[in-house]
Length: 371
Image (cartoon, one colour):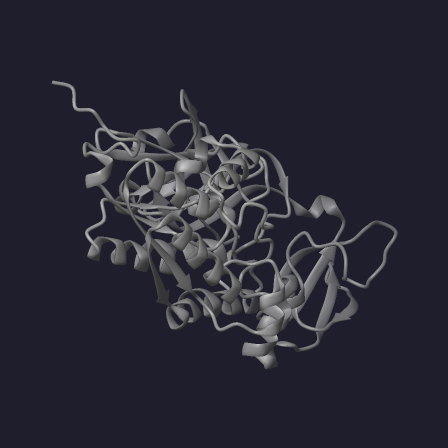
């Protein structure tokens, strides 16, 4: 006997299937809530309040601010679904903001969106959904999920410009089997068209552009707020160790940065190393940014071990291209050997693994770049 599965890959009638939709107040999660409601699922919308608003933050294009919470509530009322607000400011401060600040002080370039997904969104919200006896947690992320024999795998979205799989590499196997991503097979303009058909007030709302707790992209102001002593002058050196300038604090720099160095030479200069312990910035021509070997820590593997023994595709930044590579595993650490040079690889970023199959680019896992 063949069991008929619903659109979420579950063997239950939609009306008997309870789902939690993470509603940020944006068009993507609002559209997902509308789709689930229209398909007959028992929908509960949950919005997270992650930080206390300021005038600067409320004016910028971000998620999880006061206006977004009101938008989510309006959408829930329009759709006629239950809506809850969870107040996670303390958890967000400890799990995301503190980590962000400490990472910059170490000379790294952190990715708070991964930390947010790893902690409050997919850990605490996951637990809350389980407590509500929900059958699945649904989000508006642009990734594909394909469920076979009760196991879900994640793939890059068909909309290459919107794909968010890089930010979800740290999802656990248990979480992934419980999560669903209905927008992975859609283009962004299709999502907006659906929102308009549903009569949602957020159909034309601009996308979030900044890190949610960083007003207008000014991350150094956040670090100054929490750690004012971080602004310490130090030396800028060339690759031969010669002092060629002075900086106002290592937190103002990232690997590969060209603008804002305020030191000139016959060739354009880039930040090639940040030595936080010595409070030094090392700069040099672009050729010194070329890398083929990357060290990783804290791996998260979402595939069978044999899949990592073949040639992989890896991504070393969210906006980067897929690069051919080989991996040498050592428990929760790894060495990645790229088969071509890549430039501006920075500690604190993630290296995410993929492999092409019949369904697209399958996410295999990833790890944090140490050097």
